[in-house]
Structures are given as C-alpha cells and as structure tokens.
Image (cartoon, rainbow, N blue to C red):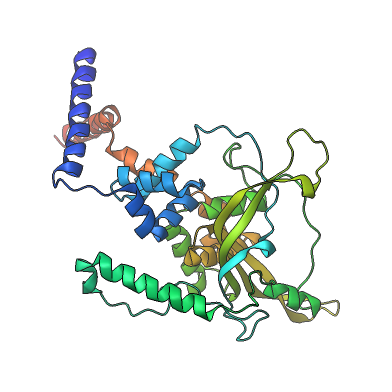
Length: 371
C-alpha cells in the first residue's frame, strides 16, 4: 500500500511538472535571457541582493526559469550558490573608492562634489506609458544616438569620478565620533548558524540579503512609531566598487600585489540618527549615530530601510518588535519564510487525522456524558 502511494505520487508529480512547462510554453512566446538582462535591471538587482550571489546573467536565467516569481528565483540562486566552491575571500571593500553613478543627500543641499541625480524613478510621473505597448526599434536607436551625442558634447575636461563621504566632513567638525577599525573576521551566516545575541556583522549580512518588502515594511513600522529611529538620510550613493583578493600563498598582504577581479554595483546608505545622551554633568544632549545599509545593485529603498533597522538592532528595546533582533532577523529571509509557509501545502495527513481522532473522542465522551 505504501509502495502504491509512492508510485502514484511520483506519477502525479511528473505530470504536474509537465503541466508547469505547458503553462510556460502554451502561448508559444519566449523571452530571451539577454532581454531580461537589458530590461529588468531593478528585478535582477533585488534578486542578487536577496540571494547574496552577484551574477546578473545567472539571475536573469533564474527569472526566466521561475517565470518572474522573485521568491522562486531567489530560491534557485541560493541553491546554485550552495554548489559553488569558495576558493578565495575578497579584501575589505572601501566604498570611498566607488565609481559613483548616483549620489544624493537629503540632509544637505550643498555637499562636497555636488548632488548627482543619476538614473532614478524618483522624479518621474507615475502614469502608464501606453507608448511602450508598441515600441519601435528604429525610433529607440535614433533616441539613443541623440542622447549619447548630447552626453558626449556635455563632457568637460575635468571629470569628478570619486566623491568624498559626507560624514567625513562632519567628523572633522567633531560632530560625529571616529571609531577604530574592527579587523576581526566577520561572522559568516552562510556557514554558521545564527545565534543571539548576534554580532553586528551577522545582523548586517542578514539585513542585506533580507526580502526587500520585509525589510522595507519593518523599516516603515519603525518610522511610524513602532520603534525609536527616525533618521535623516545623510548620503545615498550608487556605483561600482572594485573587488580585490590578496595573493593566496603570501602570509602578509601587500595591497600593491593584490589581484583585481572586477567590480560590483552596490547601493550604500549612511543615515544620521539623532539620539539623546547624558553628558558628564548628567544633562541630556543631542548626538548622532550612523545607521548603515548596503546591498547589491540599485535598491535605495531597501538600503535606507536597512540603515533604520541597523540602528534599531543596535539599541535593543523589548517594547518594540523592530528592536528585537530575533524577531527581525528570523522573519525577513525570503527563502526561510516562504519555504516554511509553503510547506503547509505538503501532506500532513497523519498529524491532521490524529487531531481529528482526538476531537472525535472528545465529542464522543461529551455525548456519552450528556446521555
């Protein structure tokens, strides 16, 4: 009887997979991986961040295979990531070396190097563009040619490619503290089980690969009053940062001998969080701390929300769930949360029948006592 159930279940599963393929192919239309790469960059960036695997091409493939389902694409990428060898570890990325494509500050109108708006939907009208229903390749090519011509003519001999950090100017005024670098090896949440209290490196790793909607939702909850963090965004920067590894056989590192592997696009946010502390005279005075957020690709909302939650978790408060590291860190992971909820679809025949039998016995006993 058990064998029949397994065999029948296998046949049903195979038929389900065939039906899934049919649903994808029945309209006889296909989307190329290159098309996804070229037209769905925000989706690719979100999935790379949540899967903690920087590979736009593989992410586009996962999107195609998952038929646009973000949670399924992240699952596929995480599964693939687990099969990869980890031969080297990169050196610490210095975001001051970022080649900036977008850089703004909501705290200051004028910042050293200036505001750089870059590419963003922030200033667009949220109206459906019906022209996209019938795009013309020739017109697109002509527009690109004209845009590139204007851009090249606007270039000057002096180009600013690297921008200083806004917070460094405030530190020079003594308005922000300066900390010594922590050179301890970071906690690796992909190789070590998360325990509480968690070190800050583990918190930041979990936040940066957290589900974008979940991180945003909890950050929003804190802003609304379910927490104590309402920051000013000191700086948002989007751009490419270089990745280096040191010589694997050298015991001491010589930065000049490092190997350049390439660069990755990241979004980095430093939020200025006002706090009240008591001075030596036991009087309250205003100070600022920094909330930090960083993630793969261009995903500014997530990075800002991450900077809020970073500060929340640095100041535990039992009153607010957004300040509870176990509540936050265990509920923002897309694979963990969707997997656990989805498992409810799997057979629970034995446990449910046991509950029904218990209920029947209770009802039967009650009826007998009533008689």
